Amino acid sequence: MVDYQELPTTSRVWIYQSNRAFSDAQTQEIEKKLHQFVAQWQSHGAAVKAWAGIRYNRFVIFVVDEAHEAPSGCSIDSSVAIIKEIEQAMEVNMFDRLNFAYKVDDSTVESADREDFSVLYQSNKINDSTIVFNNLVTTKADLESKWEVALGTSWHANMV
Image (cartoon, rainbow, N blue to C red; front, side, top):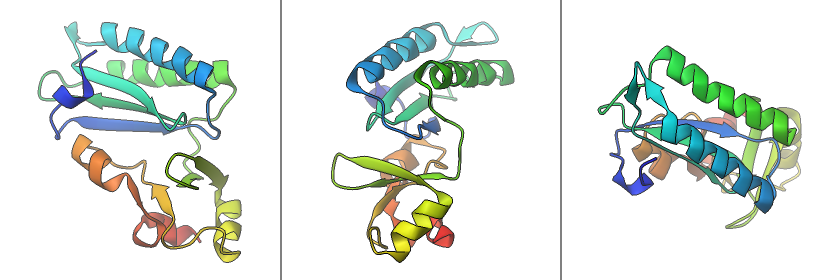
C-alpha cells in the first residue's frame, strides 16, 4: 500500500459508508484487513497502486492511481468483496445509498435514512449549513474539496 499523499489528485476514489460508526477497535481491525488487501491487490497480474483507509470511523475509502494500473472488473469485484466481508463481520450496512451522513461537530458524524434526514431538516436539527458527505466523488481531488460540503449546496438538498 502506498502513502495517501503519494497518489496523484487524478486517482480514482471509491467510498463506502457504514450506517453506524465503528468502534476504535473495529476501525483498527478493518484497517488491518484493508492494508492486507491493498498489499496484494492486482489487476491482470500487475500490482494496483492504491491506498485504503477509514475516515471518521465510518467511511471506508479506496484511492487508486489508474495511470499506474487501472483496476479491472475482477479486481474491482475483489474490493467489493472485502467491503461485503467487513459489512458481515461488523454487522453494518455499507451499500445503502439513501443513508445520509452529516457532521454534528468537527469530529462527530451521524447518519440517517432519507425519511429521518428530512425530519431532521424540517425540525431544524440540521440546516443548509450542516456538512454532509458526497460519497459520489470519483477523484482524489474531489475527495479533498467536494466530499464534505454544506447541505444547501449538495445534491442532498433535493432529499429534504
